[in-house]
Length: 490
Image (cartoon, rainbow, N blue to C red; front, side, top):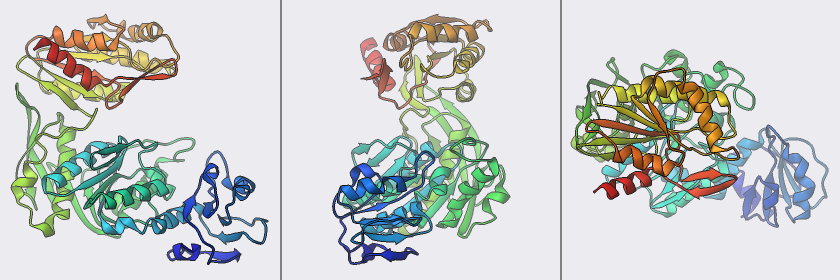
């Protein structure tokens, strides 16, 4: 292509050279520079990539997209833009042929619940016969392939590359988590989502290299409602009026036990030898009883959000209401309140909770199911703040009936030292516990010695499929170990 063919949606100034210069790719990492590439200069929090212009020129790059004046040889095409990140987003979309326009796109933002809700949306759409691609915290999913992602929302070039892969794989729909950082740094620049879903907001990601204040955080979160055609917002979110004040889309609301376009009520905590989850009634544009295969009232909230946006997205297809209502009974999200085993004897939940706040929330939720005993298997990561160990030990001792203290990712610390720190927190309570340093052995012990009616929470690693010891990652997935333990018992 000629570089000029990729500039159609950008405001720019041609400083020198020709728009007829041939290009094959867009790059933003100077290490990937080669002939026939356009290098986009971006000012990052650590480095300004304008510094790397001499390096990319040595490698044969002859197109530069810059934010400032540069002095380079006459045979180099220089294009000046106001914002390099936005330019990267638009150039990437053009380079891949604007793939988002070939998909039904659903963006999800919020402080909590993005990952779970995105997987629920995916499950509902697939139940309706759609082929769905997904991008988020747990990685990108395209068909049966999974790709790791370094951020909740990857850089704009990577986003567009995944979109193109989805189109090539025959996907109809794309679901993605949209972080506040992604909106601030234009990682989703140039995309007009068909549907934008706003779950909730509370103070988070405030500090160096993130957001200067809660006001800034809220502003960027709410920007999703300015880059979508239809918005769906939790009517009960804090700061609702501020969230929607700049919305430029058609707006719908949802909420548990409140007046909204989609309302959920009559919540029931289901727990038997075949099913652990939540049930509720939905009213409004969809009506009926919903059964969700994940515990907790907040998962009723997540499910209501997912059903709301999917009912709108599927409206033109005339999908049967029963298809929507039945689509979440067997939902599984890796490492997020994941039901790893259910039997007459016990139920086992795997979750990513790895700090005191998330641990307390999880154990409080499981208490609502009135287990005979609530057993918690956990450790703490090495080379992290010790306060986390003390506080998690204390929460475990106060809220669980029995704790099994074990390894997490010790990294470059000794596991026994981490466990001793956890015991300091446990020592402030009268909680009952044992120490089993080997995580596999700890999980086996919890399941082998479970009493009828027990609920076992294995927390801290969730979807992680490794255990990091002395800089080496060894394959380890809590769910797989649960399956091994259950098989051995049988």
